[in-house]
Image (cartoon, rainbow, N blue to C red; front, side, top):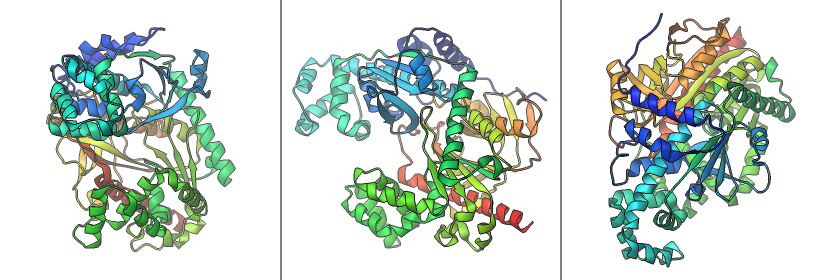
Length: 580
């Protein structure tokens, strides 16, 4: 049975995507400027003021957070699936001549040669759908600001004479802001995001028009599958070497979430090091965190102390002085059956392998344990395989590989960010209908979670179950007409991974590859499917996205409430298995 869903607003998006895919077939570089017209023409919800003369600071901020800081100097971006492909085309990205760089808000393995060439590892076509529009938005807004500053030569002359931001007068900074026609709020946000690189950014904006080119070295389906197999081979090898685990013989609970929430709640490491974390907090210049801790201690807010400690732990471990604590955590977690496996040679996707039998019930977050007795878990052979959530179609490639290589799959649970068309940032959405743009399938699932599984642990937001979700191509590849059309059809949850994951799960139980453009009923399944999305964007409100606001500490609330629900369900299911 085929489904017809709203097509309003999609023509300009389709034109844009066809344009950059056709250009990327070239064996030479493609200039981003050739995409600017179609990019502006699709009227992206994330880039609503692309056509205006003045900067769209929300879009520029969003793009800046998803690109490495060296993007100021970059003139060429090269895309490939593995270091082998880069070498075959003359880019020895694994050599000392290249260094690792990263984006604040996008997980992707990136290397830079310090000569203007950036090498980005891609896990699926979704990385192209993410990177190309991001680069285009960045360049469009950069050149707007360059044009505005070029009209103020006296300001440019003063900027060139300044060596450090500390020696830059507030009068000069005000002149730059006025030249860029930015509000004090936008100016403050820009300054906060670029921090120590802010003066360099201003000088580069004043002196250089941005001309970025892109080259795709290999875009075949086989190369994506090959890179994914390399990733899995490393996971399997490391699990065997570090924990004597044969994943092909173990029952698996698959979780797609992040690299902190499950392990934090299962090991109790943050609580064991509370004094160290509070000592670090006292040294921290973050006044907002100081105030939050004071309010928690005084009972002025309902925020969870455990969530706060998890957040401070994450901040502390990013400091260079935390090496001893990092080493202590590694030994501590190993005793509790946790194996951390970072990604190498391909895309950036870390993995946790967690043996249920080695967990210590007394260390587990009390919200997870509740009134359960977990002593019987010591007899379990099951393993939680937790992967850092991938981007878009990479979810299909990854779960397809995992399904082929592991033993019994007892459950698949997905926790991820989403845009919401009817709720607020921080709310949790639980879908049972998912439309996937990649396959054009509408999947009907029995979501193992309901509002009652999450609501008791969510402090600030609401939980909306029985929702309809749409899996989109990319964050920039939507416009107001498009999202309104789906909202009229009852689709309120906009994200990027659920559809590809369900396509992979379909193949786990059916004798053929996933269909196209069909209504697919996944009732019943031989294992659990649980999907939880927490709202990070509200695209129907102009500018209300993660470029204009950041979940930051308050994102801990929906993340950990969702994690409690997943872990409680895994434990409940496994205990029943052990009883049987």
